[in-house]
Length: 444
Image 1 (cartoon, rainbow, N blue to C red):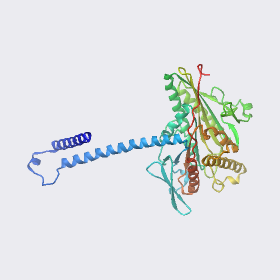
Image 2: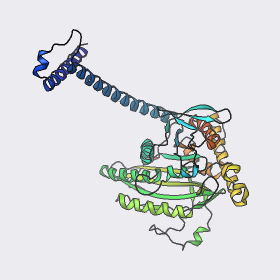
Image 3: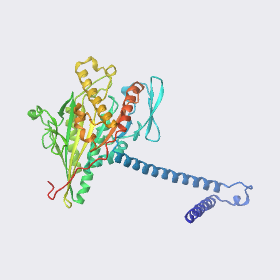
Image 4: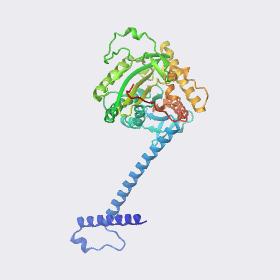
């Protein structure tokens, strides 16, 4: 009570001081001669009241922002303890390829967690709520800021998976890879940069990290190494024809963890972040040249495969002998598509690709349904995609799904399908993730 009374006195003194300052600045001899009518406040008092209220509004807004940050941290902590797969939704802006129409089917609400999508069948909005919802105006930096803590978990020894889902042409590859070296960079380059910077800082605490990168695609249910033409120095070459013919296979090690046998692993320099980022640029460029893409009616550069960027992390602490081994899996899933819109049905090759894409996405949905229902058997082996991500989705790791949406009215049906799928995914509880930690004196 005493503190509250003291604060009231301080506020009153600030108010009186503001009144006196205003009067001193504006007072003239004529003002002294003209008394105010009873009950009428002079300009100085009114100005002081406005300043007082503006200050109070700013203070309350700061408190609201601080409480919102605390709420978000508590929400993320609860989700982590429950092991929920977090779901973020991002709507892309309109593009020239969308035509002249600017009628948007997606409305992102100010709370940053809710959105509504127009159902064209009856022209009514349907409401959804997720862990985070980004409006079309959200930049790449804003998006990465929300997932940076999640990315950090890989360096702490967790098996982490972040994958983008949505119809073809909704901005999945832009979210994951982006373009250029500045503001348009996507999650992959930003994640590697963060990990390299953090690994460098942790050297002061006697940590030594080894980081290796792999990039593969799943094309028509076949695993393909996208770095097969890179040598150990990171130089692109065509001399590895023999290696290209080796089929990749998903296997399990002695500890039951999955790995891809025969997959190229490019070492990323941890001593210099600049050198490390140059190596990453070479990796991404080589993968982009090798990835299967084609033009469809919905996307001039439509990905015809699922791509998975894997960052293998191993850290050793000289003082404690602690060894942590984490993995960051960043998946750019091929877009689900309808043959009548993409036009893929008129080309036998595109048709086969579309069938393979939709089948694997259906298998992913089956896995999430089984996890949500607590089924004894989870059909991870039904597709290469789900088998590859088994460690991340079986309770040992952390998973986050990005749902990418197109804003056009023509895409409202696909957007609703994506969001309904995301709702089921958001209900999956994997349980608390486990760290991969060992202890050794020599770091082996």
